Structure formats: C-alpha cells, structure tokens
Image (cartoon, rainbow, N blue to C red; front, side, top):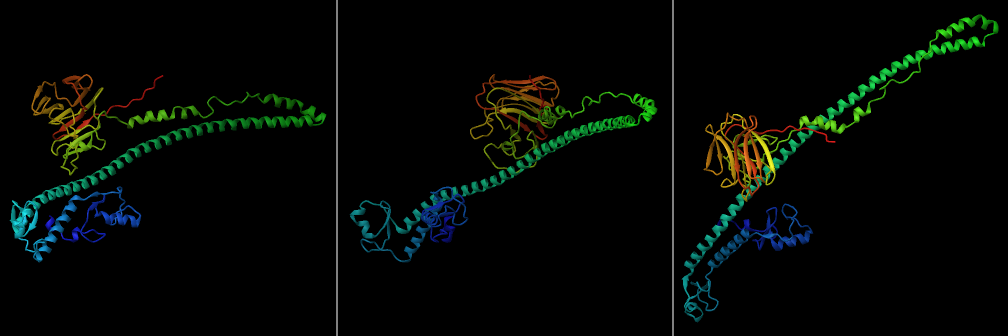
Length: 466
C-alpha cells in the first residue's frame, strides 16, 4: 500500500510538505504536530484547519500508521537520490560497495579490512538492500493489514452510527405516537366532562328560569291587587264605602302563597365534577394502558427477526443489515433476549407460542462480551418435531410428557430458591422444573423457527386502600 502512495498523499495540508510527527484529530484529519500547534496559536481556536470541527484534545494522538508510511517514503526518496550519484566512503573516499551487518551501515573495501570491522559480516550493497527491503516490506505488511482492519472497523462503526440514528428517529416517532394517543384521550375526556358540566348548567338554568317566570306572574297579580286596594283606600268616603265589599272580596280571592324557596340540588354539583378528578381519569385510562413482564431487546435479535413496535412480539422476516454489536445473536439464530435480567427475587411471564411448529422458551446467562452463553448458561423447554424437550446443555435433553398442545407457556423463575418452572397457564398443568444454583444474571430467551411468538400482556387494575 505504501508503494502506491504519492508524495501529495503524504503531505500536510498546512505546510504542504511530507508529514513530520503526524497527529490525528477526532474528525480523522491529520497534520504535522508543529503545524497544528502553530495554526491553533495563530487562530486562537482549537479546531481542524480543514473541516473547522472543534477538537476536544489539546494534545492529539500520534498517527503511527501515517508516520511509518512517511518515514518509509522519505527513506525510498533518499535511496533514489543517493543512487543517482555514486556514494563515497567519508573515511577512505572509496566507493561504498559493501554493507556491514554488525554496524548496519555501508562500507568500502578498505573499511572491510580495517580494525574497526574485524570479524564483521558483510554483504554487497545490492544484496543487503534487497534483504532489508524485504524485511521492511514484511513489517509494513503487518501495518497494512492493521490499517485495512481499522478502515473496515471504521466503515462498520459508521454504519452503526447511521443505524442508531435511524433507531433514535424511529423510537422518537413511536414515543410521539403514544403520547398523541394519551393527548387525544385526555382531550376527549376533558371535552366529555366539560360537556356534562355545561349540560347540568343548562338544565338547572332552565329550571330556575321557569320557576322565576312563575314567581314573576304571582308577583304581578299581587301587585295589581295591592295597587287596586290602595286606590280604594285613597278614595272619598262615599266611594270607598260603595266599593268596600268588592275590594274585600278581591283580597280574599287572592290566595296566600307559600314562601318561595330554591329547590334541593339547584346549584351545580361541583363535587361530582371535581371530586377525585385525576384519579377517575387515570382509572378510566387504564383501559388503554398495558403492562408486560418482559420487554424484548431489539439489540439482541438475530438479523432474520422482526420485532413488534411495542417490543412484545417477534416473527421471522427477511435478513436485515444490522450492526454486529456485542449483544447481537448470530444472524440465523432466530433468538432474542429480554431487555432486563434477574439475579434475585421471583419473576413470572407468559409466552404465547400458538401453533408455532418449533419454538424455545428459556432463560440464559450472558458471557462477558454480552452474548448468550449457550455452553453452560441456558435452561430451556422447546417444541420441535412434535416433541417437547427440556435442555440443560446443547446436547443433553430430556423428552417431556405434555398433555395436549399448550398455546401459552408460563415461565416462573425463583432466583433465590434456584428453581425455574415451565407450565401451561390455561390448564394449570406443570411441564418441567429445573433446579440450579444460579450465580449470574438471567435473561428471558425465546427462539422461533417460523411463526410469531409474543409476550402476554397483563391486565392493569386500580385499587384503593384505606
């Protein structure tokens, strides 16, 4: 690779000369250490001279690969320059035709016979150059392989960065969708409760309006009787005496009314609308909320698996290009782990296996690198070839006698008691129990051959304790 590099490829973009002690920034651009420090001092900014990206390190790391390439280039350039004119020995002014393997330096024929090189081994210049060139080329090959590996890793990491950016965008979309559902529910609930309040207000307003109208009519009738009687009282004696009998009859015919009072419940039932408002709304919201004891981790799924958006179901799909992160199962394994591990207490969850022709439900340990440790840390029950089996290792299994064909499998893990039980929750039938002293964190594990598997949802209930 070094032989294909031109001088332009190995030049610093600041001084335009071959790199001297090159350092690399986090943006992957390299510069001579002195050039970079001079640039930063002049600009008073710690940024890349090319892309202007700010550097977090005041003392960037040395680019060893580039440094070795530059030194090899300068060596070859100097060799070509020296080959253009025949070099002479600085001590004897003789042509340098030999190479002292002991001193690792060129020598002339006089040098060979001098005391300084007694019992030393020599080779012709061309043979020594070729031998050392081959040796250096072999050393360079290791650097080239390492460089190629680093470039490959860099490409993979770049793909990983694009993948988790897509993960973040997709996760953000789902979060917003979930909250939009909650917003719609709360808006509809708010509208319904305000509508009920306004309906009550309208009904009570109409009733009191009708009662006020009836009262107004009574007031008007009484006012007419009072006014007519007062007129009679102000009349002359003879006129008063002539009309007295009629005035008395008019007063007696005017019925005495009961004291008007507001009826019970005339006011707005504020307690009905505001009492335990938040609790009642939350209690009603539980119908749109669910809980699963196990949430699947998409970062552990094989590349041939598709997880549901709520991370409770998994099915087979087309092979995907996924990052080879440490937690990821092998591409064609068909396995996925739960996102949370357990190392104490008791835990229970149900896996809906349905009519799946082949499946595994298990718990497993992870290796130090985050992978599933199938060599010693996997306890599973599987259905395959119309047979139920219990495995403790990859090869050792026990055939199980299972009644019917369970559609759901309950897993009950007692970490402290050292028991892992599998059962059919629909028939309350025991399937198998492992006993083991668990020392490491255990993760839920499922595997599917073709059909979907799903973690059952648990019903959410609300209770009030005095």
